Amino acid sequence: MEQWKDEIHHYKDVKSKFSSFEDIDQAIRQMIVERGYLVPILQEYDQTKRKKFIDAMNTPVLEPESSVASNVAEWLSCGLILHNFQDGEEPELTTCLFCGNEIDPEEVKSYISDRIDNEYAKLIAAIGQFQKNLADSLIELSQLQVAGKVDEKIIDSAREQITNLQTVLTDKHHHTDQDLGLGEDVFSGILAVNDTIRQVRDEADAGLAQLRHEQDNIEKLAKRSIGLALQGRQDVDAAVQQIGSVEKRLDEENRSLELTKDFLKKLNEKSSDLEGFLSLMNGTLKTVGMDFHLQFSAISSTN
Image (tube, rainbow, N blue to C red):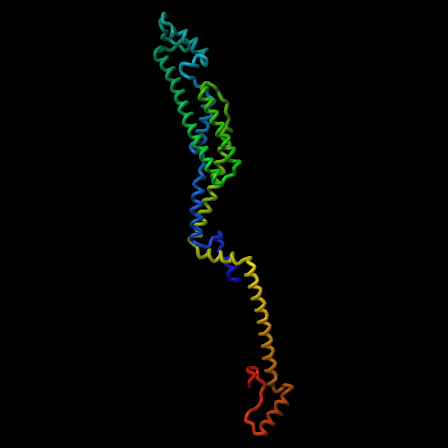
């Protein structure tokens, strides 16, 4: 019993309570499934992309043929009038009144139009893509919550922030010419849940590596498991105590036997107090014709 229980301390490289290959294999399969949910959300949005997003939300972008005049009225209204770009009666000027350079009126009008159209189109496309990514991340958070490996408060905080971002994108889509004034903290909840996911995933990876190691050393694990199973069981403790009592009695009896042997040995010595009695009895036996004699024996009581 003591040797089995001692196995607990022999194999420090195996730690789980499994005792069979099948149990470990099942645990590994379960852990792999759970680890599959430990994937950070919105991974493609690194620091650079997050900054671009914030800048895009804070930068007014004019919607073609609608808010151009209101956002650049001071420049366009004066510039177009001064250069006769919209005057059908007077010829358009070919020299810029602001910088003095020669200009092509058609090229200038086309450049301004293309620039506005491209910025607006790119912004709308980016908003649509990010909205899709945010919707996907909400599904991933729900799966992560079901797995139960990450604190629900952290998940709820990230979910709330994603909902706020969806509102921001909707507002920007409807009012591209507005500065929404976002700060860097708009991604704080998402970054927090991702840090936690990575930490839990690292712990899961370490657990998987340990289980695979124990699977390769199943004999050690089995010995340790048996020792743990024996430890603390009342019937085992009672059996060990009973064995101890028997061993104690056996030791006492062996000691008594040794003392008896020593005593019998001393009786056969010449200096024994019973030496005279032994000689008298053997002399008497010889006188009556007996062919045996008496002797104190430490070997057998039948002599």
